[in-house]
Image 1: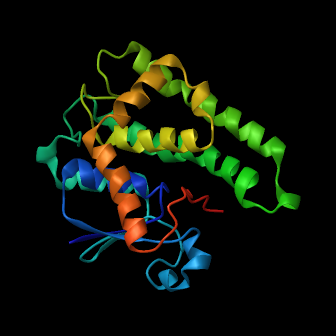
Image 2: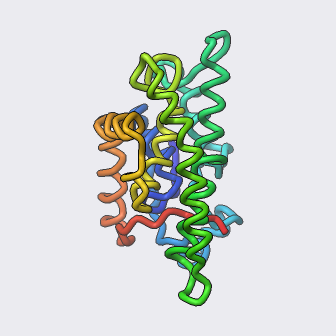
Image 3: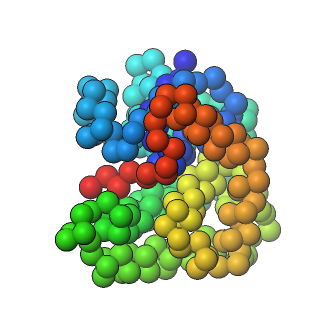
Length: 224
């Protein structure tokens, strides 16, 4: 059995979306945000105190993009993985790593210094600068989707890379940055939101949060 520890719309939404795309059985453990202060017991499970935490037997993972790759590779028949000698293998890995290291990273600073710090520590200049940074890096998605013959980022089909990059777009929407998406990026984001797997993941986190008496307000992890 797969166990996923998750906060509503945090980075752990990536593996949750993957689980729903793959239609695998799993147990979803909802946590209040931030778990390192509001669910201190969780530090025994993950000393970082962050989500996601994915557990399957002896396998324990804390990196959301890596979880997407792990789940896709473990279930190749679903078609969400890209492997050699497919010429798209390099692009696939690049999008997976870019999704968090390049796209989500600047957004975490926007979140922290616009919403999570006390008033005296808020930094409007940091928020403005890193919003611009994110949008500048997002040009990679705009360019790819403008020139692609496919509806998705690589390999001519929907893959785990789309899930991982798609979360960065979801986070941007929570931050109010989606009105600044380019036309091709916006259309791509709309396509992703129409996927039944995405919609099931959205419904699953809300239902589990209510059942486990956890707030349903989106609270992505800034990982300070």
